[in-house]
Amino acid sequence: MSEFISVFQNRQDILLETIWEHLQISLISLIIAIIIAVPLGLVLTRYPRVAEPIIGVSAIMQTIPSLAVLAFLIPLFGIGTTPAIIALTAYGILPILRNSYTGINEVNPALKEAATGMGMNSFKRLTKVELPIATPVIMAGIRTSMVLIVGTTTIAALIGAGGLGELILLGIDRGADVHLILLGAIPAALLAIILDIILRGFERLSKKAGFKSFIAMIIITVLVVASPFILNTSKKADLVIGGKLGSEPAILINMYKLLIEEQTELEVELKSGLGKTPMVFAALQEGSIDIYPEFTGTAIVTFLEQEAESNDAKDVYEQAKEGMAEKYDMALLKPMKFNNTYTVATSQELADQYNLQEIGDLKQIENEITAGFTLEFKDRYDGYVGMQEVYNLDLANISTMEPGIRQGALSNGDVDIIDAYATDSYMIELELVTLEDPKNLFPPYQGAPLLRNETLEKYPELEDILNQLGGKITDDEMRRMNYEVDYEDESPYNVAREYLINEGLLDN
Image 1: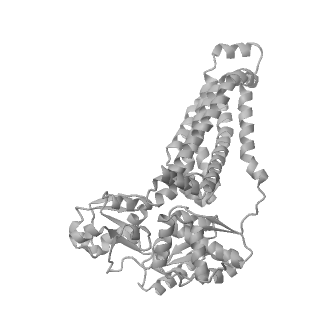
Image 2: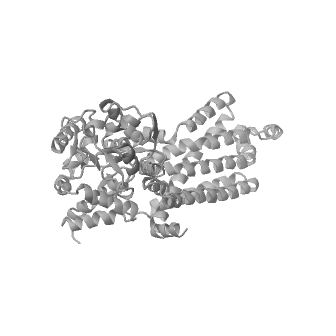
Image 3: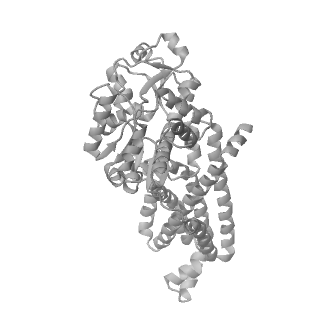
């Protein structure tokens, strides 16, 4: 408990910011869902033959995994709040639509007939009789939708939309840090409960005030949502730098920001924790971000769909640089020194037991061990696909998992081997053994800034500024910086700043 309180105290500012972001995204999505679903539900009561098919379509939308929806929306709308709100709105429509339709249909037929007998047309009957009676049912649907949206909003952090999901993802990435996960999960649950209580109050009020309570709720919600836009006078950033999940990308993008803002008048915004490689690269292509750190080996294997023509780091960089320029019109600037290549890691105990020194040594126990691989590693040629071909391996048991969970699974004995990166901090913490790759399956993976050429044409000074990191940061230095962030709870900003100062690249 004391450790959780310490984490809470250290991250109060971030917690308040993410709660507000979470609330904003949730309320905006709810308002849009209401604007779409309530009128549609009312219209469908007049056309019952098409009602069920349309409601059925909205139900199908809820069955699509949220992560798949977000990934699909990135090429169309980029990263950030826009695709998140679109996805959350789609998830929130069904309860409101169904309750709006059901609420009107369940109004006593005798009351409808009486209203018609008094000379009311369809619209007057709806506004004077049906809506006041059906409002509590509609409000119940809005409550259900609100809880659903607040819970799903945690996924939005994967595409840079912010919210409490940032803390949860950070906790997962740091080896399932329970305290960080709870710091994000508990406020998300409390937020859903508080909003449900507020909406329940409007639901009860609607039994007396009818549709007026619904209008009051909408006005108050709009005011809450609009207040930051009215009060916010901050200048839009000139550059947006993104990063994948993990401490290493977070450290590197802070270095980029510090160098750029120190040597230019440009304003830089950071968007860290944007998910896996395909999501971040799609955001760069679409223009939601302008720069992010990528690896030379990843550029060749994943984006260019080639094999490295050499195992020499310089040759690999040149191949990646030329290929990215030709195929995507992108510039890959000078790489840093560290080589964050893939590796297969295991415990010292298992390595000693079976005399494991190389990847090929796993052949003798391929039916006895369980591998814990990330989804990305399992599906890449410079991963398990290549291990099957190059080392003739066919592991009987493979569990796929998020990067931040695999080291915990190995430490707990749930898996026997994992894919890892050479500069991962837990390599130090867990004293893992890495298996050699004598057949050079894994090409060099040197980190380098990747950006569109149009960005470089607009800000040509970026090349010289970011190239100052070229050839710097050794494997040990990167591993140590990752360790400071992951296990000593230092902020990526402070770690990045300290390194740049020590290297004479930044004034103290």
